Amino acid sequence: MEIIQSRQSRGRVADAPSGHWVYQVLPRAAWPYAQLARWDRPIGWKLLLWPCLWSLAMAAGAGAEPGAPLAEVVPSPWFLILFLLGAIAMRGAGCTYNDLVDQDIDDQVERTRSRPLPSGQVSRRQAWGFLVAQALAGLLVLLQFNAFAIFMGFASLAAVAVYPFAKRFTDWPQLFLGFAFSWGALMGWAVHFGSLSLAPLLLYCGSILWVIGYDTIYAHQDKEDDALVGVRSTARLFGEKTKAWLVALYGGALLIFAVAFTLAAVPVPAYAGLIAAGVHMARQIRTLDIDDADQCLMLFKSNSVVGWLIFLGLLGAGVWAAANPY
Image (cartoon, rainbow, N blue to C red; front, side, top):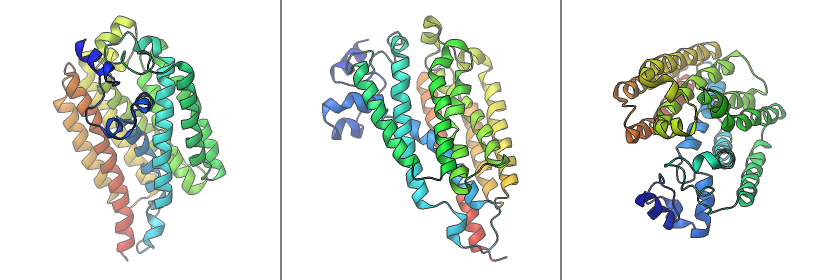
């Protein structure tokens, strides 16, 4: 408790990283807004971004012919930048919305009660204003895409709106997080082709399983407080069987990804990324201690490596096709 109070007195939340640029560059008055958007914890926007980049790279490499021009079989750098900016803006807006919905719950959980809203560092009106500003930034990014992709972007808001309430009515709130955080698996393909097919739909389904897996690990940090305040989660549902569930979730995700790649006819080297990701996932499961909160957080964050491995596999497949004339 003394540590939490000390951090509050310095304007930080209990689980905020020390020495982050947010606290070195931004004026103190901006700290609560940066914390609402989780700018001091970038893992969230990274995990939101990866399905976008996978989908974009899968679309670029779909049916790649040997010797094709490199620019035709790898993602557009402009689209990569737009997705990066959009992920940061919309993850921040989503976190701000989540904090507004969960203010009463956050006030009862040790790890979250020092966040800006429950600690009184910002008012609800200020938080709503900040949410609108971030959403407008995301809209500016979305409007750079084709009409179908814009429609798909707006459709994602339904999943975003429901997620914060899921922990109140189901043991599977991680499934609803998967609906929201995996939406990029549809967006990348929609941006490239202006339509959808079975391949991106399967990529979306596989990503949902991946999200359930990594967020179950994350949720084990708060399971005791969650039980006290009545918050439901797959961490509480799976309990001691978490590792077996992770085998099924991660294994299912990889299998569905492989089918999606096959349907998209991406070059063979893309599967190397899936194999490498599988090895990393297996290590997560093998080393997981569900009663070690610090380790759970570390393993959760390591899923960005999974994102990199799958993306680099797809990117490498496009490069391989361009460099291979036969």
